[in-house]
Amino acid sequence: MGDTKILLPEREIPKKWYNIMADMPNLPKPPLNPATKKPVGPEDLTPIFPMGLIEQEVSTERWIDIPEEVLQIYTLWRPTPLHRAKRLEEALGTPAKIYYKYEGVSPAGSHKPNTSVPQAYYNKIAGIKRIATETGAGQWGSAMALAGSLFGMEITVYMVKVSYNQKPYRRIAMETWGAKVYASPSEFTQAGKKILEQDPDNPGSLGIAISEAVEDAATHSDTNYALGSVLNHVLLHQTIIGLEAKKQFELVGDYPDVIFGCCGGGSNLAGVSFPFIQDKINGKELKVVAVEPASCPTLTKGEFRYDFGDTAGLTPLIMMYTLGHDFVPPGIHAGGLRYHGDAPLICQLYHDGIIEAKAYHQTAVFEAAVLFARSEGIIPAPESAHAVKAAIDEAIQCKEEGKKKTIFFNLSGHGYLDLQAYADYLEGKLEDYEYPEEKIKEALAKLPVIDI
Ligand SMILES: Cc1ncc(COP(=O)(O)O)c(C=O)c1O
Image (cartoon, rainbow, N blue to C red; front, side, top):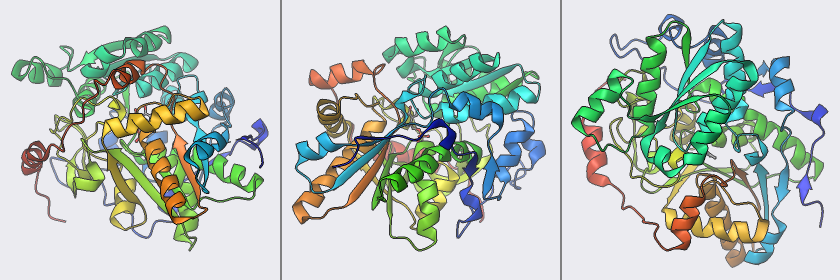
């Protein structure tokens, strides 16, 4: 029946990232300066990003070299394994083949170091001493803390308060790698103070934490900002996942019919799927699906329009599906999926019908995660479990229809520091939040109106 783990030797690590902007039928509309409503130029971005990353943000070159220093660090955990989920297939009794790429083998436990390492590298060579960033679930903060320790840089992490309280071990991991971690909203920034004055019990959100980190970077000359998702260069770095996977599928003479990735800002979905979407754009039959939480349904229920990337309105206006920048999503356990918007590249592909989206409530997601853990062994991150759920549903549908599809998903991280979420599920305490229609309507009503 073939191997359970399809492994690549280290020498097979891809040496270039894939830039989908070279192949997209329609490029995303440019980000706008909120004051002038004109497209942002490099000069708008230099206060918080190094030039190496700004160049990647706007590049339309198809292939971008991965620096040698970054490749060397990648070998700490890459290439990651492609697994054939034989025991899950058996448990489901499906004729479908299920494969997953496992990014939880990175030292931080997720796909996020694929971009935190190059981001730290380009900042380091630009002479930057400190990086300020946000984290939802703690995975991105851990990845940035890890990268900071590998390059000898200081890292400050604004961690969404609900996760800070739910996940003390994530904070301790970040501190072990040498980072400073603050619960957001915090007293350390004007953005945080303003929110706390109005609402002292605010649970925080990625949008708020981004405002704090951007403000910190913009007000300190030795400090830059790093974002764990959404931006073009972040999605670019993640394509190493899909590039490896393509080689691994070649080794076993297979190719996916359908690809699932959970979608918070879109980076792991982009990473796993963009190299395959290149084939789809060139005529190959393939379904790619973003899987999001029903309580923060950005693609499935949001509006495609310009909005801010953060709550305070400090970032450029971005053309994306959005629920409104001051929408605070319910405190679900998949903290990394609690974001009001999505990457412009993902949104454009969705708008153009190249990718699809579906949304699930968290109890159904945890039920799937537990089935996965009991058959494949690995306990998935709550975010990744959204993709697990979608893959299981597809495999069940294959069983009902007698179809032998090849299903592929990205297991973007492990859940060993998310066990409180599993405890809540196992004790029947997990709540499903209704789609917060009124709150989203309110938030959308406040968006700036831009002529496009
Ligand atoms: C394990 C894991 N998967 C997925 C995500 C969602 O981010 P993205 O959509 O950028 O992959 C996160 C975010 O923190 C995460 O930690």
